[in-house]
Image (cartoon, rainbow, N blue to C red; front, side, top):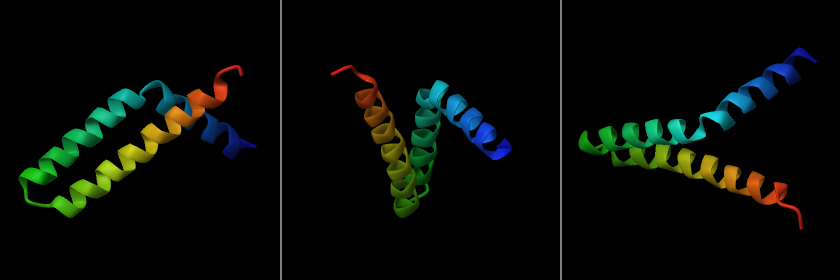
Length: 65
């Protein structure tokens, strides 16, 4: 029960600040690019893509239809 509440709380915070989180991830990826760490940058961009896709799927599921 406590784990479910914590998970819901983390999800709510992540949902609220997702734009900021995606921005921070991209800044990290840009810094990695500058360090010629393209593989690491691609990993973080992949994480950001998954988060953005999940947000889009959530919003699509919430639409009446």
